[in-house]
Image (cartoon, rainbow over all chains, first blue to last red; front, side):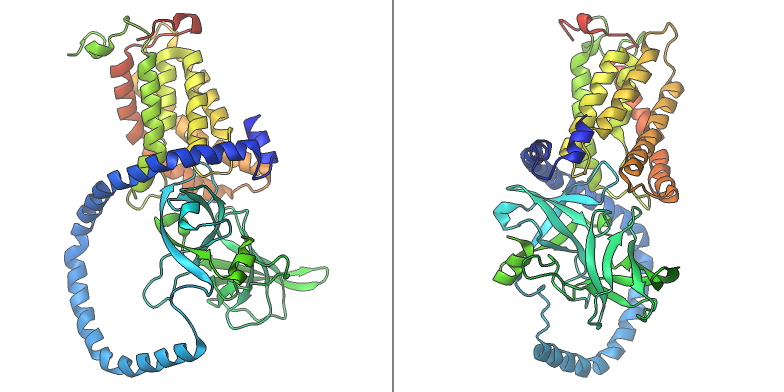
Amino acid sequence: MFFTSFFRESEGGFLHRFKGTVDAVFAPVQEASVAAVQPLKDGWNWFAELRTARDERNRLLVENERLKAQIGGTAVATKQNDEFRQILRIADDGPAGYKPVNARVVARPADLSKRVQLDKGRSDGVVVNSLVFAPPATGEGFGALAGIVTSVTSRSSIVTFITDASTSIGARLLGAAQPLGLLRATPSGQLLLDKVPASVKIENNDAVVTAGTGTFTLPSPYPPGIRIGTVSSVGTARGEPGETQTVQVTPFVDPMQLSTFAVFVPVSPDAKRRAGA
Amino acid sequence: MTDHATGALDWARPGQGNGLRWVIAMTACAVLLQVAILPRFDIGPIEGIPNVVVCVVVAVALLRGVVVGAVVGFAAGMLVELLTPGETLGVLALVYVAIGAWCGRFAGGNAAVGRWFAVSLMVGATVLVPLWMGLVYLLRGDGPPLGYLLGDIVVPQLIFAPLVAIPVWWAAQRLLGPPREVEPWMARGVA
């Protein structure tokens, strides 16, 4: 009965609101447990990494020598790169119109969904449809898209990842103007674009980014050009309208493996319009 | 401090009550551990979170019978789903009720519940939970591929289950004493 009612009612229904209230009440306990467990976790990680530290040191010494030799050559390229970035107005602090808020995972799902609860909520400026990014690796700007905030309480928020089966994102290839279609997640966490016209040339390892399309009154919550993943396979299917392609995309990160994220909350009018805030 | 005949601690000696306070404490600790502590740890290369709650439900059911097993199963399942950011409510409660009620049948028998029998039941119940979840998702129309369900979810649980089941059964026996069917009308003046 609970399951049926919960599944059938809307996000604002009684059971959803009750669950949200319980989550909000329990959030301080979750935060306290994060703080209490962190030293133990750090200790465990230190102990686990000790075993490989010697090999890692030797490898890094060799790599250090090699990198020193490269520094001279890359200095010029770095200067040029900075100039190009200034010209093209590419920022490293996130998509334009959004403000980053760092957040930690405080709870993970007990079912098969790809969602987590973060320790930042309405009091930190987080609103529904705020963008969630995985922490960037070196030289990757502000990281890759991990998900979107789907519910908020005063001190916590629920993020639904791009790998959750309920998520769909308008996507295009990096550098292309035309959207490919809606990127959907399979239950196993892969991303799939189907019914892409066969005329579109797609190759493995092509980067896929958000299309950001929509109407003025109903815009996509995702701004255009945000990195999602790379094409891992392309299959051709013959259907009634003609040949189409099914494109499998591997996300840049598996968000379920991460414990910290950057939540980008909308601050500009355009970003707020996208978020419906 | 230990009664060697029963294996129970003096301050939780069976016969001085039904031990229902210990049942509540064990369930609360298991839920807290499940939702607030265990998700913080990356346990080696194996992905997944050990299911402590289902082991406690089975242990309590084996030691206190059908009614207590079912009630503990329902309460624990609801609490876990309420306190985690999933998209279901009542699914875990339903399967935990069934597990608690079924395992509780063994509490009333004349034969003592053996350690390995209890551990086997806990491992079986641990594996049943993700399979049940997979079935529910399948009925909703977004069922996971069987390979993913078995390889990524069931197998890690199968590895974790004995590691969790053995200490849970040991602790439950120490706290609750020998198996005994507890009915609602017996529950007055508990522990």
